Length: 128
Image (cartoon, rainbow, N blue to C red):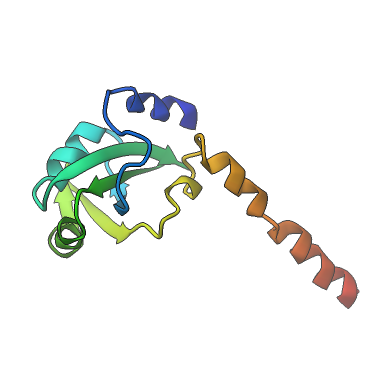
């Protein structure tokens, strides 16, 4: 249940307009907490926010840095390194952190973009 993972956010950090220097961490161990991810991410720079969640059984996280330099350093030095014995893949978030299975406040509005099922139907009808 994804809702349970969001409970971590009530930890006093993360004001609404946080940081645009955001990376996504994939391949996390199921026992990795936001604190673990923050400690890991601090090796590259000043971390202003972290969160972790599960999406279809895969543990993922987000890290926000205070500067572009710190974010770039993290992508360079921490991508494909190990945390809790698992190889962590880091990628720049394309400015849409709420569309990756997190749900949440602002993410709900974006769901109206899923127009692909109706699009898929029309070609199959025209062929038959």
